Length: 157
Image 1 (tube, rainbow, N blue to C red):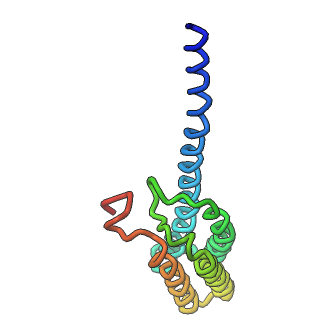
Image 2 (cartoon, one colour; image 1 turned 120 degrees about the vertical axis):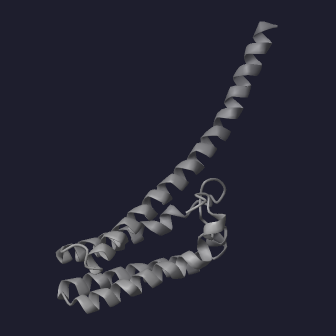
Image 3 (cartoon, helix red, strand yellow; image 1 turned 45 degrees about the horizontal axis):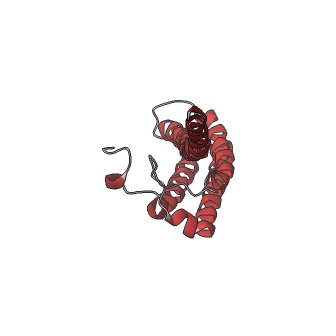
């Protein structure tokens, strides 16, 4: 009797482990994506602070723009696994329109490269215009592929 009980407990544990591992992996995927997007957002915020004249660190703009471009290179792989349930703002449409998602991400990378080039030239008007273009490229992906604020897992924002 004890042998059957131990066998049942062992079998139950073996069955439960893969399921719990899969959920942890999904949570890890979401967490990774969130860190990646926060990194991009952090660099955007830093550039915005400089461009808006709050900080005299214009020589940092090109570096931030290059880091955004590098992070953009990581985005498609971060969304290869379809995980849209849980604490995420990712819309399921990402995976049904992956080509569009990847294209919009490439446009963000190009816009960040343009910002880096403008920053190296040093004209604040060109930098501000490039920053605005980069912001629009981010928004063009957020609109179709990120949950609206009222549906966000982080409610209220």
